[in-house]
Length: 354
Image: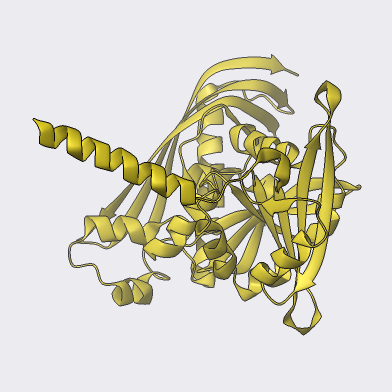
């Protein structure tokens, strides 16, 4: 009976002694970083730019921007702290940008730096910049702070645009499991404003290719199930804009034949329909859209195989379905492996017709 109280007393005492030795962080004595950007410079140096917000009256935010150049991220942080009035910490980091040169060289080192910091969550957004990360950060003019702006920017394009779900956790997972190549959004400055330009594809941790964001709707369908998305179909006879699109994807590997089957089941409504010639049967529109998505998917998959990358995680499906899976064997047959995309579209309603 007494032993239980003794153990409890010892546990509390040790915990208190341990906490007394922990470094304290007084909120008024630190500056939290919300955005970080990295640019390659001459002589293998790295320019780091960080944003730290100061909260003013009436809900407004003033961003302080610090930048310096060094050989490593850790050395850069020392230099940046020499410019700040309080210690710079990563506790509220929302997004990290890497210019295209660094992305081509490989960004695993940068990702490792982020994952080693326990104050950084897996929901952090990563992105490649076509141009300068510093210029992109400077292009944002907002009263809510650049960190909140970029977080809202990515969240909006994932929920309602052509950008698939992406964050630090997913990028790290793709690097570690070795059966899927990662991707990231790519931004640029257009009209003095940040713009989601494309999706950047990686071979391991090195950037190798990009897909314009306007053409990324099919990639998103192939990569994940979508909800409340849109799709634009154009032909010589009519244009159709379908909205409220929901999809269900399943992938099957046929071990005997070596075929991979990707089935897409899509439901949507027509919001706008422009007709040049009589085409008033929903079945015709459904078949046309099915064929259009299948053709674009085949072209996209062929491009991935030419580059020897696998952002759709086909290897992961084969590995989980085939007990005789061997990585080297998969690599040798991937470019010639039969991969079929079957699309089934159901139009559940119609809107404006012109």
